[in-house]
Length: 185
Image (cartoon, rainbow, N blue to C red; front, side, top):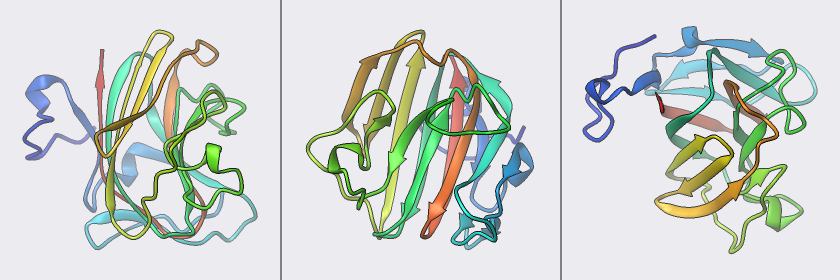
């Protein structure tokens, strides 16, 4: 794992592990699907796929109870997300993991950015396209809380998926990950 570098509120001495820090971190993941994941411009980026369907970077490390901090940039039409507790790491989807959604233009607005699929919808509708945003996710036992840019969008009890790796999805559009930090609880 990479050492934590210089994030004032998330230091290695506090137990945070860095999975992505700017251009570094791809070595912490296995790749599923055909997206063009790469280090570029201070972030890990994907914007297209050679194959149909989603592509996912799946962390080599598994997590049960944890806090996650992510900085991401998405286009207005991006369909992406963060999978947590992936119970089938070789075939990640919202039928085998929780998905913290990034999709401003989801045809079902209640399942757009800020939602936790498949268990919690979101209202009001949040827009993240064209700028850097943060997600903070806490998963402790059955309690899962999602914060988007400091605002709680989901606070739910669900124990369907107890543990597993973290996945970063690219399904459509540009997605950039500048930071991804995890601290086990």
